[in-house]
Image 1 (spheres, rainbow, N blue to C red):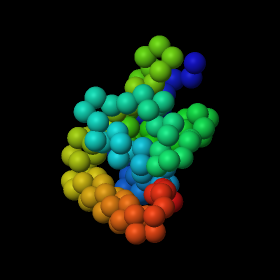
Image 2: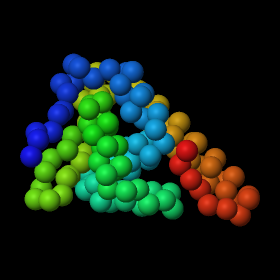
Image 3: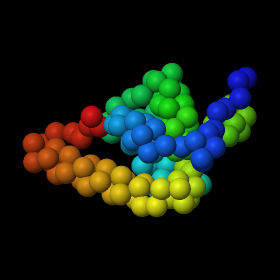
Length: 125
C-alpha cells in the first residue's frame, strides 16, 4: 500500500484549497466532513444529493482534498477514516473556511428552494 500524502500546513495554499473546493462533489464531501464531529469513512459519501458516486471517483475526490491539505485520512482496516484539518487551516488562514462553508451553505439552501419551487430534486453542480 502506498503511503498517504498529507502536506505540511506550511505547504497548504489558498489556491490549492479553492481549487479542491471548486468541484461541487468535493465541496459537498468537505461540508459533510466539516459537520461531522468524528470524521467519516469514504463509503459515507457514496450517495450525494441523490447521485451515486462510484468508489473510484470518490477515491480521486478524497485524494484531491487530502493533497490540498483540507483533510487527514487514516487507514482503519479496509476503511479510510477522514477528518478535516479545519483548526490548522483556520490558524494559517483565519476565517477562510468559515467564509467558504457559509457561502456553500447559502448556495445549497438556494438550490433546495429552487428545486422545491420546480417540484424537482437538488443536485450538486
